[in-house]
Length: 157
Image (cartoon, rainbow, N blue to C red):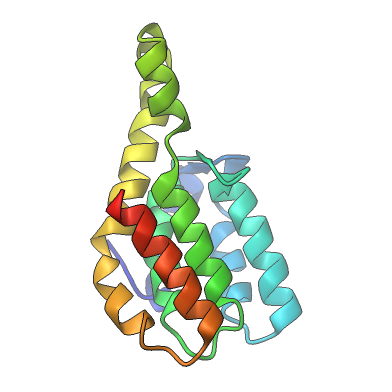
């Protein structure tokens, strides 16, 4: 799976869906996050969060595919909203809405198995890049370090 932002074009975004529908807008939102314009980056990240981790716990098909790009951005010192990206990764890593509900209502799995798999895939995608945590903990930005600790704690659960 592509991991660097320059590989975003290798993903068939039009063939997958985010929480709101077609994931075709995700590359543009990732580019805006990377733009260096702090207000535009925060707005794009808010919109991206709505598409891949709505309400901070509902993930979609495109979430797992987007995670490596978020990890890439979180490690770039020039990105203005790195702590927020790490918090989004934390939210994705903790997303268990469908799995938790299906545990209580087993018939739900039959009808919403894809949603459960999207959650599992998204969590696996966050865990796959956790090697970056050690580097992020050495950052000078206290907010980035704090957000990294929050993410590490979620991954340890």
